[in-house]
Image (tube, rainbow, N blue to C red; front, side, top):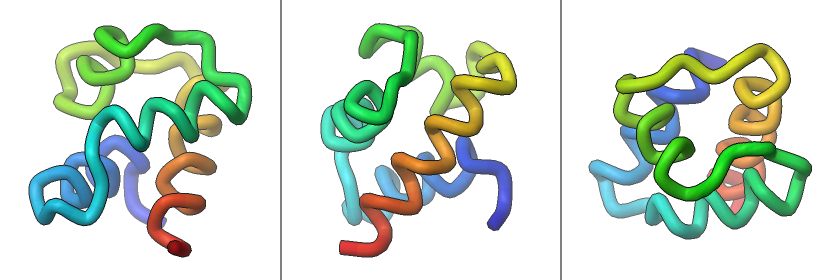
Amino acid sequence: MQDPRQAALEMVQQNRASIENLWLRYFANGGNSGPLDFEAYVYGLLDPDEYDALILFWAVEEVSAR
Protein backbone atom coordinates (compact mmCIF):
# COMPACT_ATOMS: atom_id res chain seq x y z
CA MET A 1 0.00 0.00 0.00
CA GLN A 2 1.05 3.56 -0.59
CA ASP A 3 1.65 6.07 2.22
CA PRO A 4 -1.40 5.67 4.50
CA ARG A 5 -1.73 9.46 4.73
CA GLN A 6 -2.04 9.72 0.96
CA ALA A 7 -4.51 6.83 0.85
CA ALA A 8 -6.60 8.44 3.62
CA LEU A 9 -6.57 11.81 1.83
CA GLU A 10 -7.70 10.18 -1.42
CA MET A 11 -10.53 8.41 0.40
CA VAL A 12 -11.71 11.71 1.89
CA GLN A 13 -11.40 13.61 -1.39
CA GLN A 14 -13.33 10.90 -3.26
CA ASN A 15 -16.04 10.81 -0.56
CA ARG A 16 -15.32 7.17 0.23
CA ALA A 17 -14.74 8.05 3.90
CA SER A 18 -14.91 11.03 6.20
CA ILE A 19 -12.11 12.31 8.40
CA GLU A 20 -14.31 11.53 11.38
CA ASN A 21 -14.87 7.93 10.33
CA LEU A 22 -11.17 7.39 9.67
CA TRP A 23 -10.26 8.95 13.00
CA LEU A 24 -12.76 6.74 14.84
CA ARG A 25 -11.19 3.62 13.30
CA TYR A 26 -7.70 4.97 14.06
CA PHE A 27 -8.62 5.75 17.67
CA ALA A 28 -10.40 2.40 18.14
CA ASN A 29 -7.21 0.64 17.03
CA GLY A 30 -5.12 2.46 19.64
CA GLY A 31 -4.15 5.70 17.91
CA ASN A 32 -2.85 8.36 20.28
CA SER A 33 -3.80 11.56 18.48
CA GLY A 34 -6.93 13.59 18.84
CA PRO A 35 -9.12 14.53 15.88
CA LEU A 36 -7.25 17.75 15.04
CA ASP A 37 -3.80 16.18 15.01
CA PHE A 38 -5.18 13.25 13.02
CA GLU A 39 -6.61 15.59 10.41
CA ALA A 40 -3.24 17.38 10.25
CA TYR A 41 -1.59 13.98 9.57
CA VAL A 42 -4.00 13.24 6.72
CA TYR A 43 -3.47 16.66 5.13
CA GLY A 44 0.31 16.44 5.53
CA LEU A 45 0.63 19.27 8.05
CA LEU A 46 2.12 17.02 10.74
CA ASP A 47 4.14 13.83 10.49
CA PRO A 48 2.92 10.95 12.63
CA ASP A 49 5.43 8.86 14.51
CA GLU A 50 5.91 5.26 13.35
CA TYR A 51 3.29 3.90 15.74
CA ASP A 52 0.59 6.35 14.67
CA ALA A 53 1.46 5.82 10.99
CA LEU A 54 0.92 2.07 11.48
CA ILE A 55 -2.41 2.65 13.23
CA LEU A 56 -3.45 5.00 10.40
CA PHE A 57 -2.53 2.25 7.92
CA TRP A 58 -4.82 -0.17 9.78
CA ALA A 59 -7.65 2.37 9.84
CA VAL A 60 -7.36 2.97 6.09
CA GLU A 61 -7.34 -0.79 5.46
CA GLU A 62 -10.44 -1.32 7.60
CA VAL A 63 -12.43 1.50 6.04
CA SER A 64 -11.44 0.56 2.48
CA ALA A 65 -12.45 -3.07 3.08
CA ARG A 66 -16.07 -2.05 3.67
